[in-house]
Amino acid sequence: MLGKGAALRLLIVSVGLGVWMTAGTALADGGGEEIAYQVVDPDGVYLGVGDHPRSPGVMRADDVWRAIPEYKQIIADELTEEDPKYHLLMLKATERFNRALKTLAKRDAHDMLGEVGAIVATGGGPIPDVTAEMIRLVTRT
Image 1 (cartoon, rainbow, N blue to C red):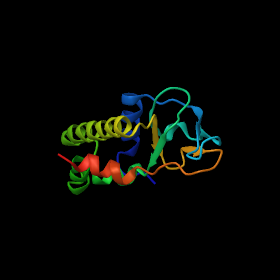
Image 2: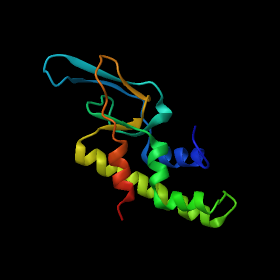
Image 3: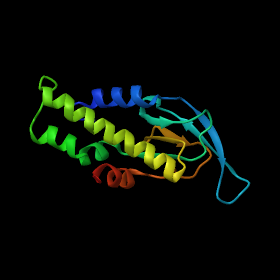
């Protein structure tokens, strides 16, 4: 379950980055066997490039958000959407999340990043879980 402000976070991420419903294929590490990737929950895609992802990654975004310092402050101070400080901190948290997405995608050549379960490998094989790396990226200053 998404916590406080989750709908706003998802809206900001979706509008800021764009959400594409895509399907694609990639060769398995062994060579000739193709692994097809399919988006089964377009609302769970945080970053997508093109129509045929070849190197997607998935994360548990709630865990990532709980690690973002500005979001932690919102929770600790029990801020609500009625508090002006909430919006400033949420904007900074969203910028931090988006920056981490873009950094990770570029550095590790992920052409799609989404929530665990939003993207599946229809031909078998796991999709890399990038949660720990996203947490590392959002917590660096």
